[in-house]
Length: 117
Image (cartoon, rainbow, N blue to C red; front, side, top):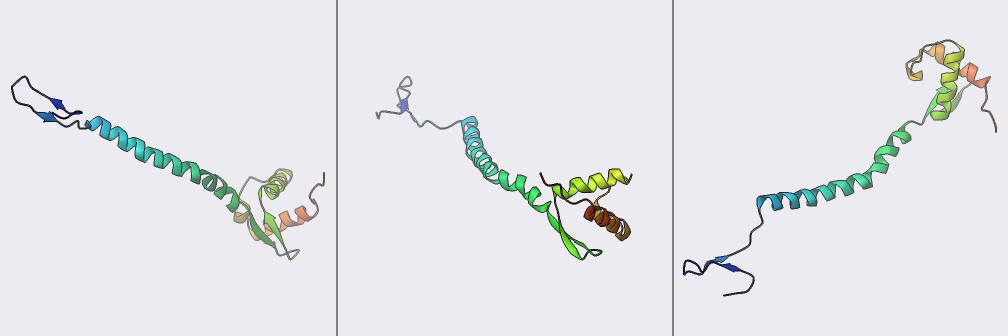
């Protein structure tokens, strides 16, 4: 008889039984294997997923009245919301406003330059 294998001698016949993993152990090992891979992938990709939205939130907008460009980002969004409040307008995305309202905003914005701290 070899070591490491089980034998049944009670019947008078030596039966060698190879240890086999149960279905539960196989399933758990697969979950561990693929779950670890997915967790690692999400960990590595999460900065791209989170910051990807922030990167797209900044774009250039042309001001035809003053013939210049403005970077539209969170900072400009603060001024835009202030303009909406001061002029008693409902909140709407700047891109969805008509050309006349956009021109009014840029006129107001040029009269309210960035505050220097």
